[in-house]
Image (cartoon, rainbow, N blue to C red; front, side, top):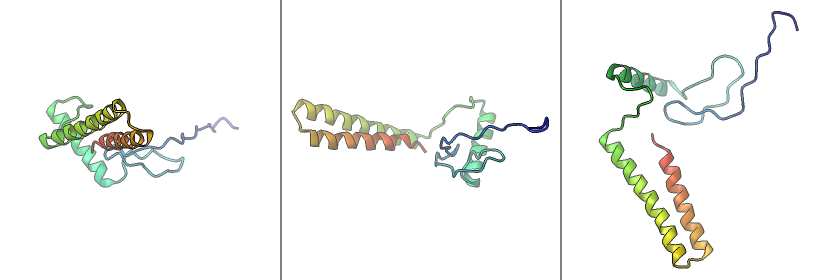
Length: 118
């Protein structure tokens, strides 16, 4: 290796997700900047959010939700709590492993749905 050459570390194989919508980004090459957004519309929405935050004086990591979004989030949290309570009740009533397994799957699905905030 000559003095002008340098070793560039390879990018990790960890999946990357869009900075706006959370979708998984396609694997890119090892050249250039990593993608932060899956498309131009997500890039634009992120830009609009950044500039609105700068104008409002809110911290950059602030999350602003509308009343409708808060109500939907509360509904999803309620569904998750009810599904968890169903498992507790079924276990106390001596439910079989099949029923408990089915109820646990419902909790997992409700939690997975809750992860999708956008």
